[in-house]
Length: 372
Image 1: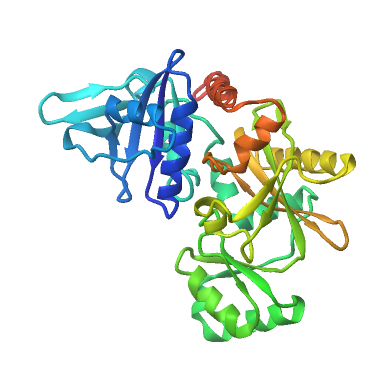
Image 2: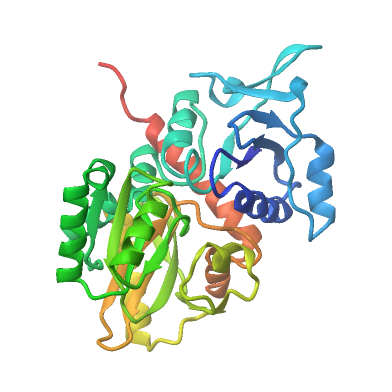
């Protein structure tokens, strides 16, 4: 098959995407697939990368993908182009050249990649892609909407308050919400942007003064912010794959060495957290996590893959859903692939599974009517 790996992106997680995509490139089977690399700059421009870049990553286990901005390798998307004409390269010396793509493998974390925007573009182009659809991706990126759907499905979530920018900008409303937080939650509390992803802009506030500072930071990343009470909890994660038939893999546990599992602990500090796979839970709790992960995945109409994150209260043993990542990290220290591997699905097989799921979903959707 012709596979396009798309990476980089106009996102605060651009650098993480480079590392994740590098791992995908190293583990995809070139004997089975023709690989194209589409690098997206921080400004949002798409460039086809050379075969030399592919070979460099394949030959060096420490190498990280780069994005060469060659004006003769600008990638454009053609609505309705399909697998044979959905992507073209524009060059001053040759005009336009099509790039056949049977499946897009987006390794785009955060905004403009994980939030339904890229998925909508792939849908318009008529090209199959790995991961959740437009609605599922968009809703899952929004922590408030995700929690509301899970609550409607009677799934357990941590209590929360959502503040919008218009409320933050109104001093009276802002101070009333802070008073309500002080009344209903005990400090410390967590403050996080609703749609930034992967702990970007997330902070821990120990008092009302700290809460104001945390809100200021969070609103630099999004127009909606969540405030949640701190729970002395164990952090559990579970990988999930599937379309109609869904599989949840061996859960793992994050033991952060930082104050909490922040961006640095997740992606840049190799000693930021201990990763325990399987999580040190009894069989009943392991089963409970996996079953709840599947319910959470299906409640959001997800397809392809996701990593579902949980809290387990250390005192009461209560299980809470935290969030879902529809394009989880694929770096060398990321949990998603490690948890799949613990269940016997090794990285190269995982990639093949995701490509197959993308193709199956596209074939199923092509059977739907679009006119009478």
